[in-house]
Image (spheres, rainbow, N blue to C red):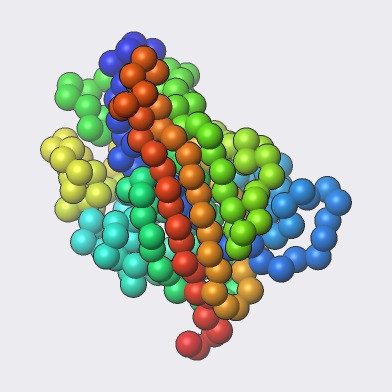
Length: 248
């Protein structure tokens, strides 16, 4: 892929692929799962692989108008909008945040740590004509730029975060008017359906968490220019997640 293509992938990763996290449920210890409460990376959950959930998370993120999109600060009370029945997606659009969410009991969580979506049409003027393999290369390059990743859930470090990196199948997404890409200045992101798209990134699939309050912290560094560390973007995200009983 050209340097322009890789730079575009990285810029979009910085805007949309910063961080999300959620809570680990209290599940029985499992010798095969080094992070109890987190679905193993090679498992299927509600019929989907990690990579398929990654595609679904991107479709959700792009489908919600900016005014209601929960990845934006100030929209914490809109977290339920557009979510699937059994699994909710969590994400941010800023590298440094301290946010509070309320999640219903019994809901599993797909919590993005860092991901990048890449295609030939959105935030590109003129459109590109990369192959799917080249699109995957661009998404990978953007995610590779996120380093020194650390995730703690209620003070406990998540082991081997690299194991939770996946790539999506090819997918398409439908954007509404006043979508999140337009909010960030992409004039070509008109309402409509776009594809092919691919995504790459880290995420945690969490079984339904226990009722109560939890604290999650994620940190890392986005390397924008390897020759100039002053351009790096520090990531420091704290999530306060309250899991409420049914009907509350």
